[in-house]
Length: 327
Image (cartoon, rainbow, N blue to C red; front, side, top):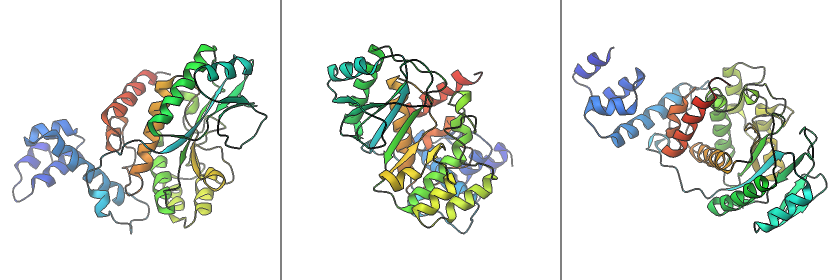
């Protein structure tokens, strides 16, 4: 049906007409105008339509949308625990420790270890090329107060002249103590079907399986096979195998859950820019919360990241996608 035929149809509800218009690829703004309704109403109908469409698109069609999944979604206040690992080079450990302390953060230079410390630690990283290579690892941070500490750490890095190149990455751990296996399955599946869109807001060397240290969740499988295996998992260990095989070097590392009670996201490129890091942390936290009861539509475009994010985050990534289109 064309848009004109949908609008002229009788015996149908306004909601049905709006969903059909969305199916033609029209935006929420366009549909709101055509139907003479407010944008908020169009957004609510769109959110329910996306959730229902995602459910019917599953490789396991026996799953049905719940009432919670069809209700309008509002991102929660950011209050999740998180940690960051910032790979960089170009400044000495001593200088960075001193600057971190000057910014009001407790910091130490450590030997190589995977233990979460109650302070910012600087450790070696053999994957980073460049003089004075290192990895700056945060303690457990939480919510907006944690973001304030992250801002201080970024100021310290930049004051010391820290640099990044293609060998550097940014890893984010999000606390997962409140997540069930079902929640985590939804999360991994959602990231899987969002990969193409997320790739478009990353540099070329962080897309697909171009980087050894952040491989695609699809691996050598078809998308349908990957989705089926992920959703068939019944334990965290089974989910880890379905998502990562035997390697933690994937965009979403579920092995971190059994070790540390976190989920690690490894895709982002190296950066010392606070805006880039903080937007990525909040984007991931929103995806985690959304995935507790909801499934995103496969290949959801970047322009529709408002499905599970506030508008400022969606706008940020829409602009980032444009900036990276030819890179």
